[in-house]
Image 1 (cartoon, rainbow, N blue to C red):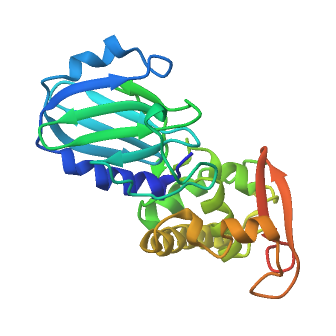
Image 2 (image 1 turned 90 degrees about the vertical axis):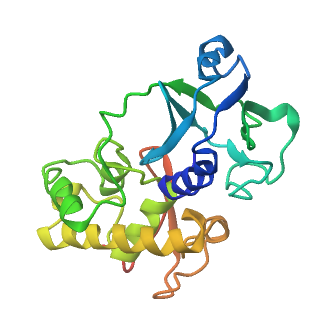
Amino acid sequence: MPEGLEAAIYADAASELAGHVVSSVEVDDRCTDSNELSILVGQRVQSVRRHGKRVALVLDDDQLELFFGMTGRLIINDVAPIGALEYGPSSERPEWDRLKLTTDVGSLRVNDPRRWARFTLNPDWSTLGVDFTSDAHQLDDVLDRQQRRTAAVKSVLLDQRVIAGLGNMLVDEVLFSAGIDPCRAFASLSVDERRQLSTHISAVATRLGERGGSHTGVLSPEVRGSLPACPLDGAPLSRVKVSGRTTIFCSLHQR
């Protein structure tokens, strides 16, 4: 699914609809009950809210969360702010539209070939951790509270109850940059290493956000597929599974 960086791009694009009234809602009933979303007609989009990977339209009386699944793409006024996803097609078809919300100035569509997209009224985000764009002090604090966890470092970082918005590719990039083995027990990290993690989460998220998303790092989809030598030290890159997720790392400089 889109990671926090992609969710931020989607939220920014969807903000074009802010201030405008919903005139119609069409939804694939296999994703969400169309009758449930009919109450949005006549409501004005006040703003767009994002936390972690979650995006929601804030209307007069309700909020509508847009969940994209792994292959869903947001399209605003027939323009896709993200051209292609790693696990999805770069094109769209009308029959893949799972939601179409029309206002007096344009439309918002979610196009998903696999029908994994879901749309939820008034979502509860209370279980989510701090946002991945939080300042260093907040990240330090939340990571310190995990210091006794014996799960792998990567597993802890992927836990949306800890830091919301970190996904598979972004976590690999953060750990590669920080020089930390994704398979290490989180409890084995020193205070300095936890501080390093906070620093690299902020730095990598900023850098990749400016480039256009979580796929633009050193461990790009092309690198993840071909596993060339590590660009930092020339050692072979490794591929393993951590918490069921494909994980790319360098066993030489990531300790």
